[in-house]
Image 1 (tube, rainbow, N blue to C red):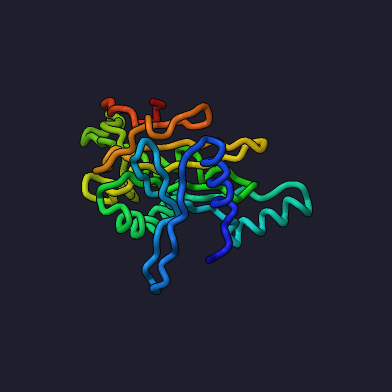
Image 2 (image 1 turned 90 degrees about the vertical axis):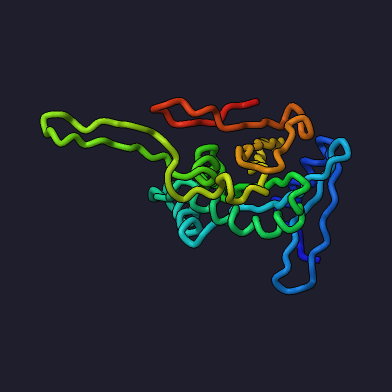
Length: 224
């Protein structure tokens, strides 16, 4: 059995603190046949969970070194949700296979890069799931009339749609703040097996869903 990651140790601690039953899913020995990390249970309903953490990239390690040496770092330019999308891509195979479309699934993310919070920010989760926020402009033939906005919507690089990754019920962010653990759960509006918020509740657990679309406005997370 491989050594537990920081995120796995913290997730197990969170489950114990919140009296959530959990079982580590045995790793498959067959090459290329990966399995999710955990099965948690609530009210006799099983939920399949994959836990992943963001570790520093080569560039982030450079910034960390800069911070230690000169107490400031260069600015980092990262496409919103880029690393989150890669985590979704790498988790979906095992989540879909293990859940068999009969159990909710959660991808739990933990940020192990102390110099930035952007990988797990709500905006990163939103754009990773639903795509970049895009503005549609109309350019009139009459050049005396200025271009104007016709719509605000989600655009490219989405990871969930009506027929894509519908076995993913939610993406959650595990937060370790002053040695207290919190779980923010962002629900997938396209999930075929939605996660009932009542199955996971408590003072350190928050559930979010995408608000209804208002014409001409971007959608944001709302707590429910």
